[in-house]
Image (tube, rainbow, N blue to C red; front, side, top):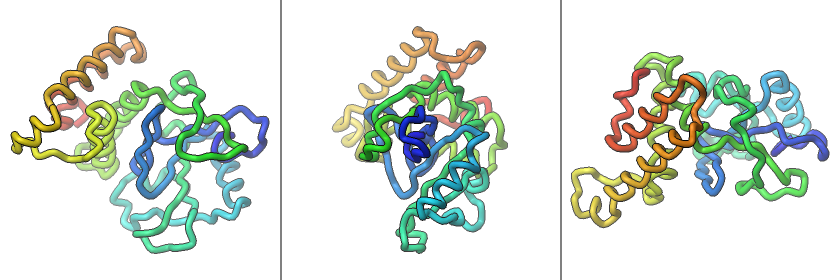
Length: 231
């Protein structure tokens, strides 16, 4: 298994995450505190036991009030660090693959860029369009003020900024014309919309989900995530 190798000759079946703390795409790694992975539903308990055997004990979610909704309750948290303070603690969090709505066919084998280990030479990662589609699809499950919805909106917004707009420096005040021009935001938006529309031309979306491409392009163009049908 990738990342958590139970057997070195086993096909990689661990898909690195899409969720809040760590987002891993080819040529993109945004890391904060936790490493999040998707695993096949039927192996969730087995992978969790393997982490315990490796000396990574169960940990409580960083938020003790479940403000992150199902990102707190669906994942199994395992502590990486000895420090248990919320500011310094790092976890591995494993989620059942069904939580993400991703299909096996939407994953591709890649060389990991967030870890270096002879026991983990390849991992399964979702393609960029699959990540965006999954986040938008997951939003259909939750109500407007649900904690999980807030997390999904935040993840989608940050991913668009870092990945599609390539705004590695973070937030830019939309009312600051100088910064807007300095970073050529209009050009970045235009390029990102073109890329998303090219995905639609290439028919990357699931059957009946072409609307996701249209919705994503509109979000990139306007920044108005709240205009999604699910929001």
